[in-house]
Length: 113
Ligand code: 5GP
Ligand code: ZN
Image: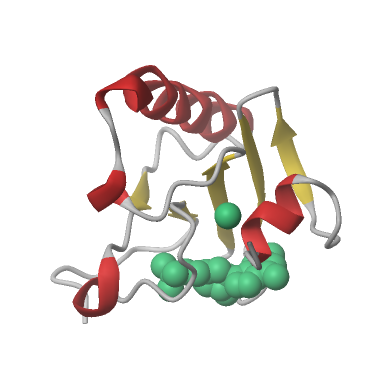
């Protein structure tokens, strides 16, 4: 499958990795929308939230605890941050490998555009 995030997970495309374990990888977004903007992805290919299975439950909760720990390490947990998961066309998903954006170090607007 020709998936850019699978290639990043396998190290076939270079990225600025900030965290990695056997299940997930976190790397800086190439087009940052905030002073801190990184992506957390499962290493396993999942198209989107729409194709999640019950077996993925641990993986998704693991991603959230990884985000918690990275944000504490970056010391943005006090001021706060935003986790975004875009799903499908109306959700603005451009890369069809499930990913969580984490944005921090600026006051983010609500509602999003
Ligand atoms: P989406 O619009 O699908 O929610 O977000 C995809 C994100 O992936 C975008 O913010 C885009 O900048 C980022 N992105 C796409 N291709 C690459 C890449 O090859 N490397 C990195 N670091 N980020 C990428
Ligand atoms: Zn993939």
